[in-house]
Length: 221
Image (cartoon, rainbow, N blue to C red; front, top):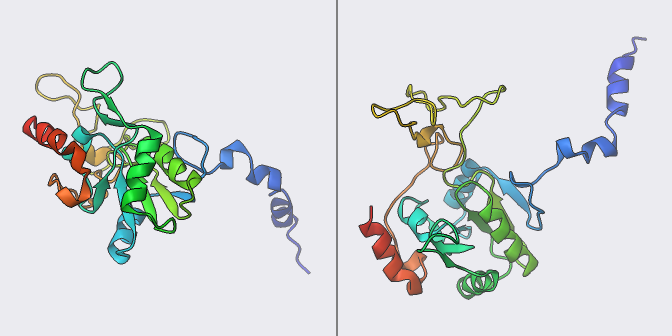
């Protein structure tokens, strides 16, 4: 009888400790604690939105980011900032976790609602998803790479031309010498996946109390 000790040894070496090691850890790309169900790719999120009308996509980015482009079915409930880039920005306006939860609860009171959260690159959406999960929402997931995402890189950590157009995000320089911004090289929803995007702001998908902010952001484009 032919034996295969190496194969057996490989199986026996796969211990629970190895499965739970940091190298095999699951969760969001920013390594935040995860109370929600899972992190999913933009492609999986878009497929579920297409196949299941009950699935809700909540975009938690700022007003300016949302106006600059978003998924067509994305409801906009910003967290943790409504406008501005940071607390030192004069335009900064915060959204507390309590206000965020209240806004989601008013729109989707059923705690079994399947909700997907999305931000710019996967950080804020994880925080927002945790808020909902801790409040009793049982089917919450976060888009791992967000709407824009980060540059795709090779095994040496170098950015690659993911969409094959001859321009590498942040590496190729334009006529003025500035690094090129090529969204198609990023790993988010709006990147090389070719998923649908829009700049149209549907009044039914945004918070009415921020209506003036959407107009201001759109006027600045």
